[in-house]
Image (tube, rainbow, N blue to C red; front, side):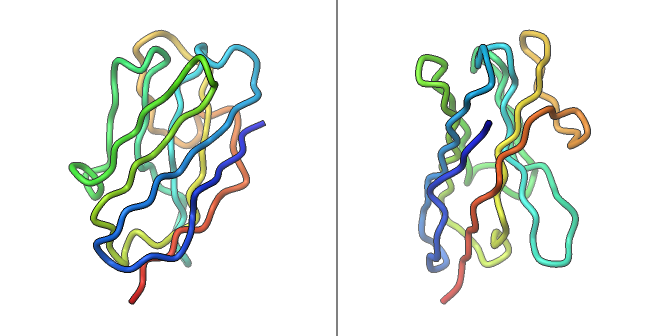
Amino acid sequence: QLVESGGGLVQPGASLRLTCSASIGTFSDYAMAWFRRAPGKDREFVAVISRAGTRTSYASSVKGRFSISRDNRLSTVSLQMNNLKPEDTAVYYCAADYTVTGATPSDVARFDYWGQGTQVTVSL
């Protein structure tokens, strides 16, 4: 089970921090990622972090503004979102992929577990 929190309504340029709490067995066996789905669009990759947290990867649209991190002791993964833009408005989903050490998958089909999503709205 993955449970996201931290979404909300903010103005452009603001920051938000999303957190995902996991109950999926051995948390450190999973690469963890964030995806998002904007109205009328497909789910898209945002960021991923490897099992040990040593490797990350980001979508080009968020690189330099978003940062993913994880705490394997607490079984949580977070997404720090800075300088938010209206085009970041979406439902954000946490996802887990049971994979090998160092992997940073971004294909939505790879992921085994999904959260229910949390709404992020960026608007004046």
